[in-house]
Length: 382
Image 1 (tube, rainbow, N blue to C red):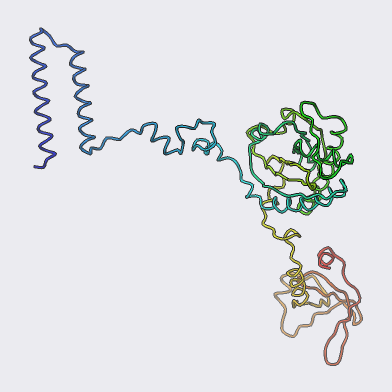
Image 2 (tube, rainbow, N blue to C red; image 1 turned 135 degrees about the vertical axis):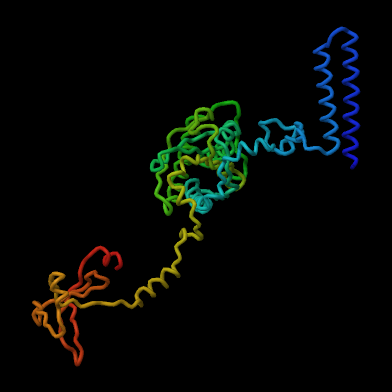
């Protein structure tokens, strides 16, 4: 008999004494009290459960709220809408990382180089364009984070049948206006807050956006031809909604510096806009030419020209039944209809390539090529 058995016997004796005492009380009072008995049994059941937990029994332990939050990675100081909790991470797990689209980095790097040249020609000033970062964000969160005042340009990707937005901050707006209207170098652009942008300022920014959109078309052209067309200019983010707030989008932050002046421009492309060319964006290309390796192409072409092929000279063709073919005997002669100076066909893999005439050169039977057959496969090869 072990210690657990002894404890069980002690508990049973105690329960028996308790029931005997309750029976005596019921007899003294003239009848049993059902409510009191039920409460007593519930208390005894709770005591038995606590004893089994203390003794390492098989009952399941219930997690409290702090332990649940710890498993989810949710801190008590953060609410559900906070940025660092585990519940927030579960909600944001549906976001697609931009790193899954490696071609975007190459496209935007090419856009930076194109913008540097085009904006120098546009402003007649020394312009430096740099790519700050590329990130993935919810579209609604981005609209709420736009610092005002700003000009938001909505453009359409015609081939992709969707939209994107460019956001130009106030520093860049006043810098562009100052540069294009002949402001002195070395002086900060004058900023007048608390008023809407004038027609001149909007037109100058619109011209700059059109130049950038042309460069964006050129950047996408090696991958897939896309025409980006300016749709409208907005100053209120609520009127620039082109996607649902919960949809994911690509955020590209560009920095434009003109000596001591400049600002930031942000490009937002929803994932729905890039969905038609998603397979192309998933490809891993390296280099300026989007994966084309001239050295490998030259080596492959050299090896193709050096490939050996079996060429068949077809003297004549005739139609025979299977019975006639099965009855052919050794020494039997087949009459060909092609004359000695007639034209014969040279084939490779069943495809006619050349036409010529049969002759003799020394001790060998030769074919002199007269013409080249024209067909799609041979034209593509050439």
